[in-house]
Image 1 (cartoon, rainbow, N blue to C red):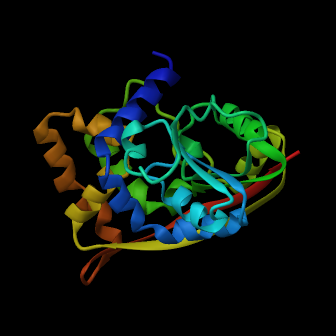
Image 2 (image 1 turned 180 degrees about the vertical axis):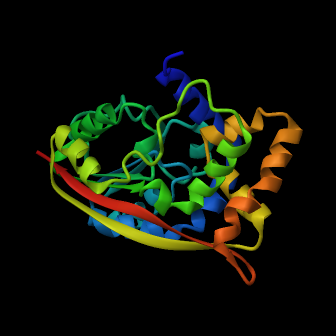
Length: 268
């Protein structure tokens, strides 16, 4: 069977709808990532900002505080369940590969840990470029290489160990973790002034159960697929992940340090 982008999107949407407000609490623990990405975006009062793959609107809300009453900050996501978590924001449910906005609508586009979930990232980058003003700026973040992101790879490794390989491979969420490859893809979509900086952050978990729940509360399509497994298989995964977590054990739980690439680029 060949990869079905439409089915992939339906699974991601269902997963984030299922997670609902739990994503907000889990994502808030990574608040330093939002702060760093906003700094890269260099947002100014009065600007119009689009937060793409916004989830519960953490970036959009922070951007709103900067642009003020003379500006605009819009949250957009494929998941209506996530957008329901930010009723205080202008919000638009949309596919990032086909945005419902006029050309040149925004001074800034943000995309925090979202680009790797677009099956056709070139289509998404072209759409972002279309809705940006000519002097606008894209600021995005992506996961680093798999070996640099134990926060996610630990759970995925446990899944690979206990579950059969998927019949159809999903796009890897680490596929932009190489800075040179990411720069090439941005340049292919007609972006210039590309700056890519690695950012390291650390999260602590009291025990393996806290880590596993944290993964499920952020995992979207993967969480949806796991939810469809028999209960005993779900319980087995939760019990087994401690083996993968062992290298990260501390006196009181687990500490996982991971790398995110922070990117800014301009349309050319």
